[in-house]
Length: 396
Ligand SMILES: Cc1cc2nc3c(=O)[nH]c(=O)nc-3n(C[C@H](O)[C@H](O)[C@H](O)COP(=O)(O)OP(=O)(O)OC[C@H]3O[C@@H](n4cnc5c(N)ncnc54)[C@H](O)[C@@H]3O)c2cc1C
Image 1 (cartoon, rainbow, N blue to C red):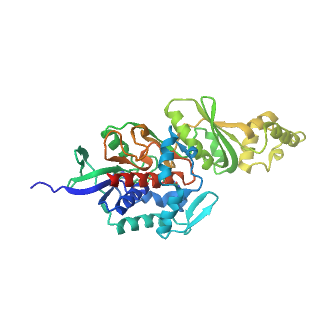
Image 2: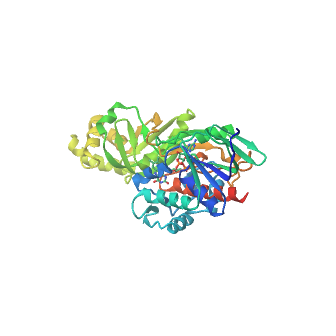
Image 3: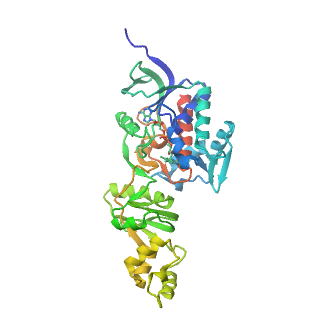
């Protein structure tokens, strides 16, 4: 006996942030929606965001916060669903928020509030879910797509790939979407880890492991200053991290992948020019070349490290305080929060996120070659792209 073909208007692969937003948007128009989720629960990753508090958007959404070769793509999507729409959406789901500077968190301070709001709305709208089932293959038909899975094949008019990336170690982040996209003829820009720790092979780092200090981190690729960020830097046994480092990690990842010369320079006295730093250090060191002359500027462990390297020599001290340089060997994919790279945006219609290769095929979220800096930008991209893909898929 042949297997029954299940019929849906829209199938979504991936029940994470962008997939759920796409499902809700489409189901609100009356479309029948089926979501495949490889985990046993939905939007697992949201629980880990913002250190469990979920920085879900930012009031200063601007294209410069996104690394994409063509900023128009991002702007076109945000014009249809921006951060204010995100706030309105969650308010309608009874989520109150707390604004810290430009960053928004749920008022409960719990990422589960965001996840539960999405899951409840999708369930209330009768979105259907299939968990823990591997998709075997797809094929396109004149009326849409057939998805082969373990039991019955599924036919849908539109298919949305919202599988996320492969950067983090959270279950489900295995890059399946890149594989599916290439099966369907799409070019995938090599996916690399970003917003993660920079691994540095320098054994002396163990001496400063655990230090947290203010710094400006300048990122150089082929001798050009590419990024510069100021904030708290953290040393660990095998590298450096902190938001200032995470922001730099995307271009370091790309440069390493392309075999380009790259390094980061840490300035521990960003409020001083080189001249001012030299003057300040000179007046301390002129009568006392012991470690005491350097105390109180940075945490003690780092002071000891700088003193051991410089022995109180003024120019060496200036160089280390202002220009400590590291050559990262890679971006740590265990701590990386997003993937940079992904489905090539030039093959996607900017206004709808529909594939230019297969009508009816859409992409949303991190699987696309769009990634933002820290600060709620990546989830906003998930909400905006999920909304746009869900809306246009349901209008077909
Ligand atoms: C530790 C951490 C902290 C972060 N903090 C923040 C933050 O505070 N603010 C912010 O803006 N961003 C943050 N991010 C980034 C943000 O979580 C992601 O950018 C966002 O979740 C991407 O949404 P997505 O829907 O594209 O992918 P995901 O949320 O990863 O969802 C993809 C879903 O698809 C499923 N899936 C994958 N393959 C298959 C398959 N073959 N079949 C079926 N299902 C599949 C996965 O299991 C997953 O549920 C953080 C990320 C991490 C790892």
